[in-house]
Image (cartoon, rainbow, N blue to C red):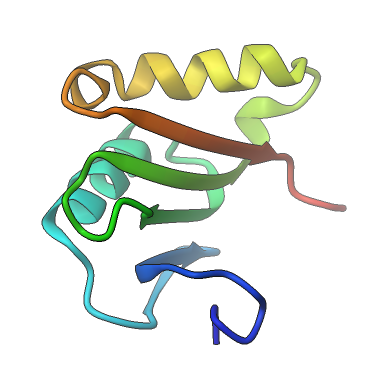
Length: 104
């Protein structure tokens, strides 16, 4: 499904309104990053973490939709995600962050 949308990814995990959908097997790194984000953003309506480094855990793409980002500039939203993942980031080479607020 992700490939049909034009995304090349391995093991995306999507959290949507409190229910989990796994489209493929999830890497340990994806599970760890997802777990931290769920703890730090309990009001998130969607979280998607994809290891875009081929499975080695060097780079991740994160999509997170949360009310916590409401009325915050994009740079502030990204700072919140970076702070939440401060320990995990130490072992990464890169991180792509996409944040949004739920549509009414």
